[in-house]
Amino acid sequence: MKVLVTGNLGYIGPVLGRFLKEFFVSSTLTGLDSGLFSGCTTSLSRIGDTYYDCQLFKDVRDVGVGDLAGIDAVVHLAAVSNDPIGKNFEGATFEINLEASCAIARLCLKAGVGRFIFASSCSMYGVAGDHPKIEADKTSPLTAYAKSKIGVEERVRRELADGDIDVTFLRFATACGASDRLRLDLVLNDFVASAYKYNAISILSDGSPWRPLIDVSDMSKAIAWALIKPSSGTPLSINIGSNEWNFQVGQLAEIVCTRIPGTKVHINLDTPPDKRSYRVNFDLYKKLAPSFYPSKAIDETIDELVGSISQMHLPESGFRETCFIRLNHLRSLLESNLISSSLRWK
View 1 (cartoon, rainbow, N blue to C red):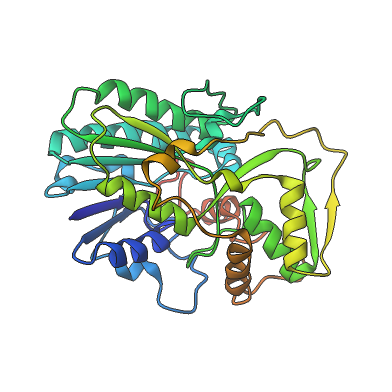
View 2: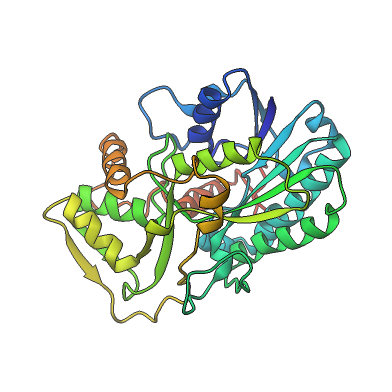
């Protein structure tokens, strides 16, 4: 099996590369990435990037049909990856996350690629209702990032519906967990770094919003399933995560505190309530892929994060101004005149 992974030089890609090579021993993996975050490595051991057989340094906006020649499946991870970046680089977010993603899906059909697997997001549900959201529920995206994800699903579903290609939209819960290129702008990763390094967790809301979480290792398992599952016939949208990992932000902080004793939690009651609050139902994934359904315990993820963070040099003044926050890294590249506001290398 020949698999092309876009955006492989990010947070998820190193974990995914290692997992796919172990799961599909005879596979050939090609990575495609512009390299904006390639230097943000945090591991002292063999990095997951080295499990890819070939690396293409290319912006996803410049991908052509020739880049997909001979490829059996495309795993499309590449995206401007969170809400703060989407707010600061909204134009680039829609160019990369929406327009380029739809273009690559069309190129897959043209090149005869058998599977297109898109890293979508549960954030498109937006606001919690009375019940955990299922795939058929109405979406309510609140940010450029979330709007781009549902936009891809709607357009690709329409444009590739009759094509000879298996399309899977994996609506991932919020990512967390250890990686060779660790991000600290994700809720659990932030809490663990704060607790381990500073013995304090600062919640920037009232702690009530709901978030579903998923470890990056379990995200990799879901992608492996999408690579081998029976064809759906029509594009499939599916929530990826576990019912047991729906947490309120305040509850999540308390779990971290029990794992890292001596940590104090500060809740900012003066800030407006966070509208991004949603619980998600993952029954369909559990039904279709029981052997791939997440099995990791939250304590295990926290312990692995502690192991990774212990190798990092975090300043005593705090890490939220460092390059471990992706927006800060992009701003640094922009201020150094290395990239443009469209997030292209100069």
